[in-house]
Image 1 (spheres, rainbow, N blue to C red):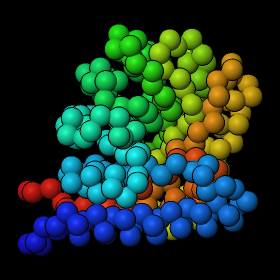
Image 2: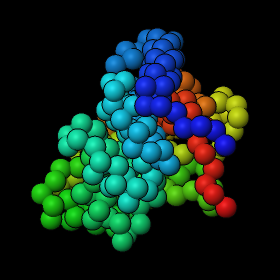
Image 3: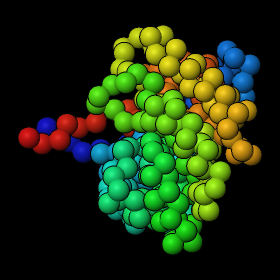
Length: 244
């Protein structure tokens, strides 16, 4: 069993990793003539402890992504108020909607009109303003969530009448491939969909965000227009498998 890292060692490692990731983001953006400041790095802290959150904060990173509502709520409670922008990137169950609306600033995984409206009602009850993204299923994988292209069109239309949430764009989880080039078409398709929705059904919505790309493929995602990349292991290191 590995000895736990000291807080200074962890902070140093996360700072070094972040420097490398940011350099890769800048290089990918430059290849497309983009400003790296257009790309928000969301460090995925799921399964990592509060000490990793503290290390990220000490390195100047303020956007953290989680895919379990209760896990994130616990970390938020242990973090100084207002220091982190929390992003929900997992599948949101109906019975977790209120806690999610209370915990997160961004929800990346709206996959139905019903969920959109439930989150809006919860945010209204809590007197909160939230940004959300519609998750698009572009590959039809049974193990992943997301709305079809036509279902997401309906979400975009419904979002124009929401009271307390703002639909800002789209998110995708493409099929896994060790070759980043194999998923480039999915990133390109999401960008094209965003452009289509913005011009045909957006109804004044900003629709300026594309959440796509993870540790192994975020550079390709940036080349295809990502404005948010969800990076976990490249920032925090390998995750420890859960005990059996």
